[in-house]
Length: 443
View 1: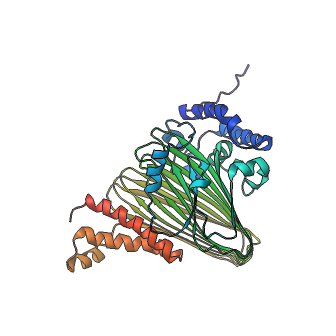
View 2: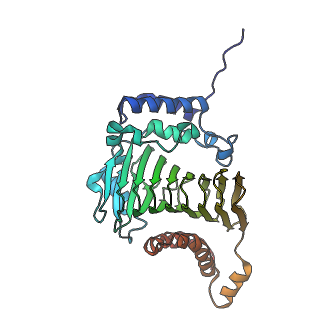
View 3: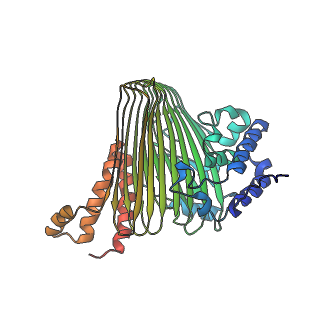
């Protein structure tokens, strides 16, 4: 007689099973949503947290790195929420704000002035009335962290930009996690852009300093024919936080997406993007500026799939790694047989500022069309000693010379997104990071 196989779970995985059973019936949505939640959680129960034997997660073994699971966050305490809200890294940027606090949309804290043609709904409303609008762009079986988000999503927003709309101000979806003890937040944003609309979106994440909170967030972006979208993602979580983010996008004919990601903070951060360029003449650009120090770890994974002819994608990711920090970039450009005349490029460049800093790059191409122009590259190294000597020979202290070179290095990625106001706000984050680094440097 053969014994039935037994699934071995870590303590964190066991805690997730208990937590889901406890919150399932009070999460938003009706019977169809609960069925999908249950199916997604069954995937997690079968597969567990991702680990290094899963190729997409080879640089971030979440099963071994996640020792415990914090309970799902409740209402944010007003005083703690105010403190997190006031610590605004892009305070100088004039923008509308959609506030999501501890996983729940807070319209009374939001500012939608200057967003004509834009409709904002809470995720709870959408799950109750039109659940088919959520999760249309991917399968929960694609990734267990995304399946967990489907099972546990407690809130977020659905943003609809009408056809031809051109909101005057950038629109920020700001995610705040406020607590005095570890909590977790699972949020979902569903954004639909109408034909020929033009919009600038900012997705930002920050939380209470010194608290080991955990975030699992997922954004879905569906871009209509001829629409133009700038999507800026800003991750400035607490240094003790765990931040898991997924991004799924689809582009129709003649659509344009420029995606800029700035990472500074979080002890462990992972961003994964799954983008389908589904329309003729559609264009997508992905740019990243990542700053790592101490023992932080950041993992970026991006899959861009070209399924239509005459489409274009460009990728440029810049990374600066200091201390004992570690990072990784995994990129895949996939070109299907019918996507002739695809033009796709991928580049990642890394500055290593200490002997103990580490960064891994793993670019890949998967091409089934025969009339394409595709390429990838990766570099890593120290600050150019010749350039450093040139600046110091003109009287600059070493720390100041290094600061100027690092700023110039990261500016390439920030400027590539093409928005002066947003770029200026983001450069302030770079300057702040370098100022803190400079405080520990010798002149």
